[in-house]
Length: 278
Image (tube, rainbow, N blue to C red):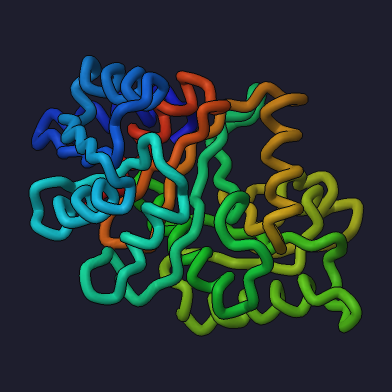
């Protein structure tokens, strides 16, 4: 998949077969309503708007709608992220799957030949190698849903060699070895890789670094939230990239939007949730 136009079309085609219900916890937010109404007008979802006096009650009711099958997608409305995440992670009534949750996102970058996925830029602060493995599994699941059969994952670091003084390089190599043993699903993982090697075949030639991911990464796994946040904002504000992102790893995709997100980002995040829902 090369563009958000293709992504939106694919989501509309999937929704036309069976339109998913999107449960919105505390839907009384004009920014959220704008996004949901736009998605409804395009046939992407049917909104189940839940509004209660108590935020925790609204979050629990929205999660319950997913558990019962009444809704297939979940969205945060006018309430704090910890409130809805507490409902999602409740061991008895939540949406746990046994896999760690992570923020999975897609970017359309002007001049680039395909969509690029970056993770985790918003949820996991300083993940260890076990958490990073789940982050990869979540992002690979998204890539598969978008038609990428064997995505190429670059485990990013500042350098392409393992250095005991740089934990990101140790994690990256461990993840590559896990993928080679088939523990991360249908994907290729290579690391550590500096960003230039992940996206530039010419850099690979100059540095004499080869491998299945060099120069053609689909997924960029960042070492921590700080690196991811900086990369995300650099792409959006300098390169004018279009972002879309959702939370993966629960029983359904979760749309958590910020008021600062553009209308385009909000719509494409909902479309992304539609495509990744089972």
